Image 1 (cartoon, rainbow, N blue to C red):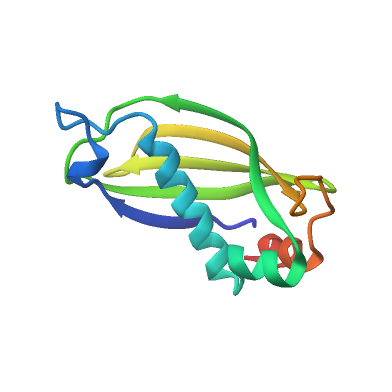
Image 2: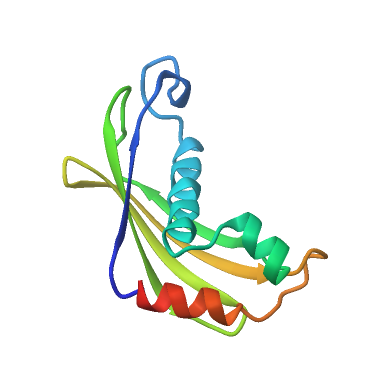
Length: 133
C-alpha cells in the first residue's frame, strides 16, 4: 500500500475521561476502525476474509506514542500505510493527526491466523490489494 489511507473520526463524549480528554485506550479503537475501513475499501471485509479465506487478522504487537491529547468533539484523521509484508504478517504505520498536527504515532505488527489461532500465509488477494491500494 504505497499510498496512504486516511480515515476520519470525531471524538464523542463516550471516548473521553471526566476531563474531556480522550482516554488512552480509545486511540486503539480509532486505529482498529481505520484498519477495518482499509479492508473494506479494497473490496474485502473481516467477515469475508473469515468466511471465504478462513483468515483472521490479529494484532501481534503495538507500539504507540501519545504526543498531544485529543479532546471532546475534535475531528481526527488516521493516516495508515503498510510498511512491510512477510509470509504471514505485515507491519502497518498509523498516525493520528488533529488539524494536520501529529498527536499519536503507532506501529503495529498484524498476523494472519486460521480459526484455531495458528499463523497462516497472507491470502494472496489480501496482499495484492493492500500492495496496490
